[in-house]
Amino acid sequence: MMEPREKLPYYAGLVQQGLETWLPHEKGELRQIFAAARYSALAPGKRLRPALLMEFYALCGGQAEDALPFACGLEMIHNYSLIHDDLPCMDDDDLRRGRPANHKVYGEAAALLAGDALLTRAFEVMLSQSCPRILPVWAMKAASIIAFCAGMEGMIGGQMMDLAFEKNRPQAQQLEEMVRLKTGRLWLAACAAGCALAGEEGDKMQRARHYADRIGLAFQIQDDILDCEGDPEIFGKPIGSDQAKGKTTFVAFYGLEECRRMVQELTDQAVQAVAPLPGSEFLQQLAQELTTRQK
Image 1: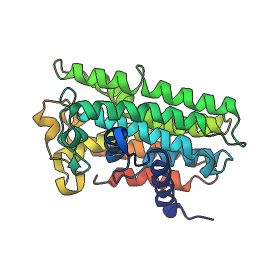
Image 2: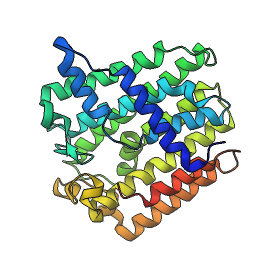
Image 3: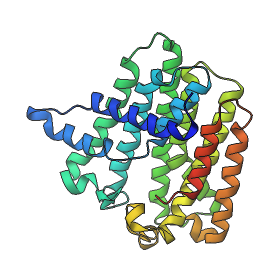
Image 4: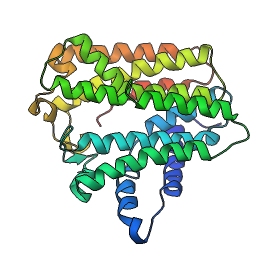
């Protein structure tokens, strides 16, 4: 039996291997687009979302490794969103995870296409890798959840709201809704799709959704805190970049101390959502660690 602390590096290793398989080195005329896609997707990362997808699948009775195509697909979608988010027409960031952003290495056009390539490859991988223990209807349900969460009523819609708020300062409720869409929806995709792959639609699915909602908000508020007082060497980007761009953050609304309290409260609620489920120790531990993370 794997210890909770061993799970995240194990899942991250599986995802890294999967990404290497489904995003291979390419020679010839396609080498540039493959290189640009690999640059972001294979960059060092925590692989939190794919880990949650596999863990919830396992919690619902599946074998975690069977969900790897969906875990890797979700990670590709996450990285496509980061590539596009860094573009000059979006957040205009030069650094991502302590390295030059994709467009600073490959140019804006190639970065745009690399993001598109990761998005389309994600669904190709998720829907072309069959597993006899995952019914096709369950796979389609999981893919549908991920597509919805990444689309206009999810991550993309949240990004559009974020751009609009650069010109018109939002109210606190609007900020929370934007974060739920832009950041929180991919956490929801991870947890809910993991359950869906196992055919779960009942209590575990509802607990997964609540858990995702709580950690999604907590994750972004902690990000806002780190943007004010984090270590740039650890955080991977300049401190104060959101304030410099005129972005409205939770810290701007509530202050640092209240934001720390909110993160702890949301984390406690996430833990309470999954605590009744046997074998949920990893999920509880992960929620707690997100509270104290420095990057």
